[in-house]
Image 1 (cartoon, rainbow, N blue to C red):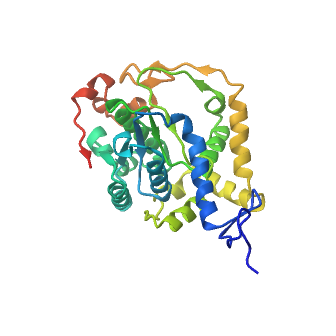
Image 2 (tube, helix red, strand yellow):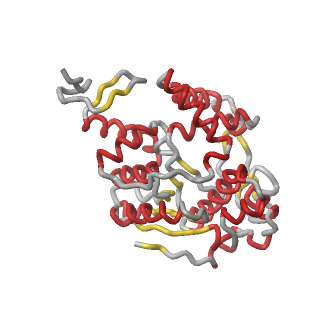
Image 3 (tube, rainbow, N blue to C red):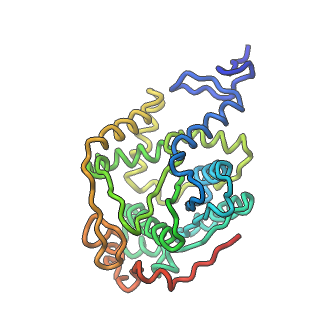
Amino acid sequence: MSIRCSYCSKPAIYIRKYSGENLCKNHFIRSIEKKVHKTIRSFLKPDIKIGLAVSGGKDSVVMAYIIRKMLKNPSESILGILVDEGIKGYREFSLKYAESIMRKLGLKYVKVSFKDFFGITLNEIIDFLGDAKLACTYCGVLRRRLLDIIGNKFGLACIFTGHNAYDVAQTLLLNIIQGNITHIISKRTEIENFTPRIYPLKYIREEEIILYAKLKGLEYYPEHCPYRPTVLRNKVRVFIEELEKDRPGIVYNILHIAEKLSEYGEEEKLHKCIYCGFPSKRKVCKSCELLINLGLKDRIIRIQDLDSIEIKIYK
């Protein structure tokens, strides 16, 4: 006898071990969309303009599809942001899927690259540094800077990224391992030119995102970044996945503990970087610091120069 859905008499297609639910296709899809809506509902305001960071992978494709359904006027409210870091043999293929989902959903989008803005690709950065373990640091910081640039250039209220529950849990554990406790418990004050990044999939597990994409017929680029095996984050990822196999739901325990700790944190005052003018916790922001380390001080983009930068919008 087949297992039945916990909410109707239809056959269950997914057993949610951490909650004890058996879900049919419709109730599974509904549960994912309900979780996303609960996570971002405070941002779904009339006339809001949001950015969607879309890479073409499963997370960002599913995120774009769900957010598109939730907004009343998505063609005017959403701007897709496609970032080409310059990872040869990987990013050029994933961005094809990113452009495809943007066109299918009828959403506007922009394409920006490390090469165009910083004069260097991630591959070239790693060749220069001679250490692939630094890939995530440089990639993450410079990619976030491009998101900041787009957020300010187009007046976005916030930028949604496709980080899922495992991604967020990995970041939290990495901060603990590296002694960056203030990153977990601090509360940021609002400041001019700061575009917050929001994670609509924060409470969605990776395997559930894959299943949602399959049920909805969403195509995405299935390969992983070639630098992934070399970085510490990958070891943390494997650690969390092993724990999750033995103790389903442990990833949510990590998220909830971090949220509880943040209640006791003090407000973290942001300043303006002395070079670029973007919000920063220090005199020199991390983006400018890395560009200076690479001998690319002349490629620092100042916030006052954004009006003169032309960025094409694709439809």
